[in-house]
Amino acid sequence: MIFNRVFAFARLARDPESKFTPQGTCVVNMRCCVPDGYFDANQKWIDTPVWVDVVAMGPTAERIESRKGDAVLIEGKLKYEEWEAKDGKKRNKIAIWASKVMRVPKADPSWERAPANDSGEDTGEHEAHDEEQDNLPF
Image 1 (cartoon, rainbow, N blue to C red):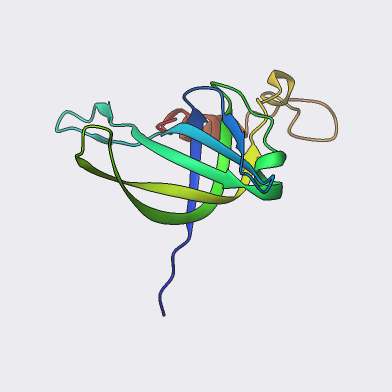
Image 2: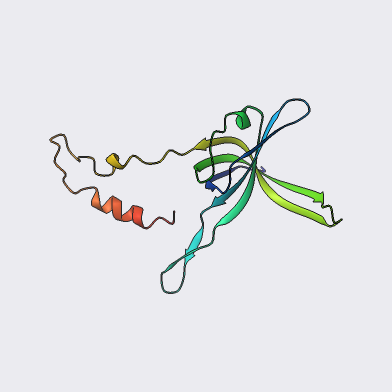
């Protein structure tokens, strides 16, 4: 069975560009940065972001309201594209053709230290979770 499905958490590198086909279908092109990286020999995190083009069409494209810097969750498939540039050279790339694009809302700072029990007292049980979150690469 062949399976071509991609899920990516990314940030928009610039505002999405909307266009319409002659038939009236909305097409949105986005440039996104997907966080990635690794720990070097000294256990220091090294960022190696992945830059990817994303294309959305039809109703998916019409619902996109995100702007440069927004975090988005993208679901779609990989598509290989080839074309000839104006200089005559052949070009190619792999892009994500999105079936879903969802803006990820910014966290509400008041949620960070919510009480851990019904009495409203902070029991400190959340501290281990906070430490785990600090180790995330993005």
